Length: 427
Image (cartoon, rainbow, N blue to C red; front, side, top):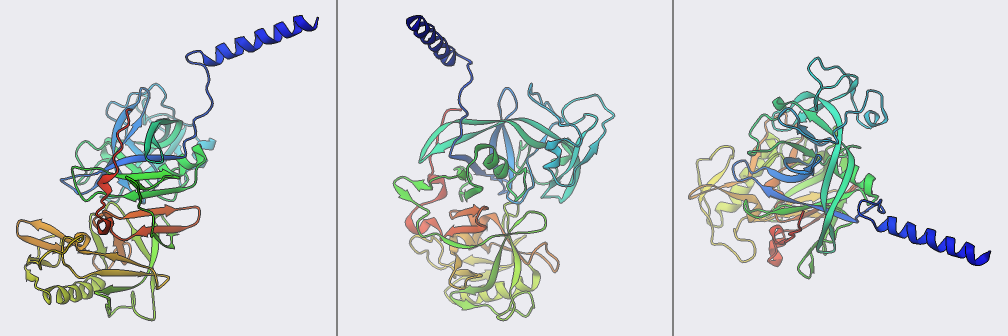
């Protein structure tokens, strides 16, 4: 009897092993530790674009990067074909994850973006600051994985929530062929938050933006290792508290501004020795840093005085900039442009983000270089909005779990740039 029982047990074990190894058999969930997205600076607009795989079958879709965006929004009005598209019904669990949703009725023929008794959300275009009513939807999303410096297979999320928008959403000076906007903001359904929740890695992502339009930078998500060759570029990182604005935007506290290690005095209550202001926003949809008008005037005048003292010659400005030059001092090693050093001093006065010439001076046209800061007028959305040009060739780590921003002074000081991450996986 015992031998017969053992024979049957062995047979059942063999059958289960055969089924487990058969093509199409259910496999253990794939939970990567880190993901990454190559990010390209568009030549015409200086805006940032990533390609993300969506739909079934998977298709690579170019999307504008909005650091403070609430969720992923995709144009569904033109040829959105997918066998796994789903629109959650109103009052469902999926809808409860999105703030300010409402029940949706669509009078046209049912199609992606148009179903009755589903949830609607307002998708915001950050370039035009306009909202459009969009259907909350689910579909397959896939993103590239990485282990140490080695790219791995695609990680797949079967029911990724996003906003299915009409074509009117894609207005403004968008990069060519962009089909939507991907939000990285502090919101339950933004890209980093959904991926962290799905795969169980920390709520953390990092930007390393390339200054070149023909070479990719990278966005890491999760527990990535920031390595260029054998060098860990996270070494020497500084940290400052990261706060969240009322719309989910990322903010830091800037206490003062120095140029060439000298404090800049401002005739405004927004910034002084005795009063700080919060709400310095970090963004990616402003190509250049935007300053409130009174801050801009004092800042640019101080910078110009320091710059002309070492040999720069000022000329009439080129829009959108307020200060331009037609002669620069001789370049210096590692920095490229011999410009005054700008320090944004953080909440801890020992912590400062230093901006060197390659991130403060931009070539506006042949023979003309400008200070890459823009006048935001008297009522900007924040006194300072840090733009993408100032972020280039730095690494910025947004640790949402510990509410900290980690950053490192320009990589060029070590002859490194953000385009040196070289990942070439096969999709």
